[in-house]
Amino acid sequence: MISKFPLAAAIAATLSLTGGAAFAAASDYAFEAVAPEMKKGDDVTVAVRLVHKPTGKVVADAVIVRTRVDMAPDGMAEMQSPVSSLPASEPGIYAFKTDLPMAGRYQLSVAAKVQGEPETVIGKVIVQATK
Image (tube, rainbow, N blue to C red; front, side, top):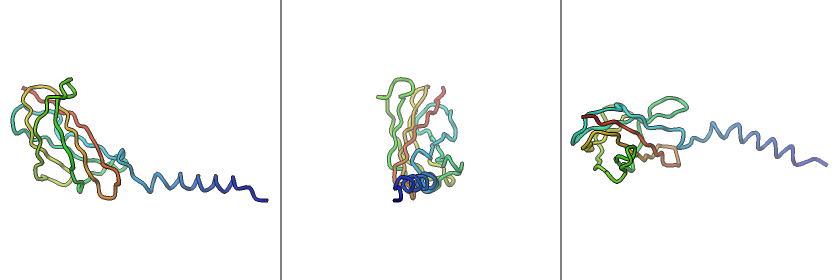
């Protein structure tokens, strides 16, 4: 009689070896600030890049589905600013117009759909507004 356990172990090992390479995850991506510091004011441009962490390559074809800017890093999450998308200046750079009315740390929360990725990629980028 042939045992079923070695076959099951072989299948599990094969799946574990191919699973990491075959399937990406939303956690394989990160948003990074292009310029982490800027002057406070109205109509400030905050730009981020989306990077595929395993390869280090910039992702140029993501679709931004949700954004928010607030002062959560300084304990004032209720202090939100309006956000609107700007045209891309170069592939992989996602720019947004917002108001940073006072000096301090602001958090840009971004949700994006990446082609071929079933999960929504969610990131938080902190920028510093100075006087």
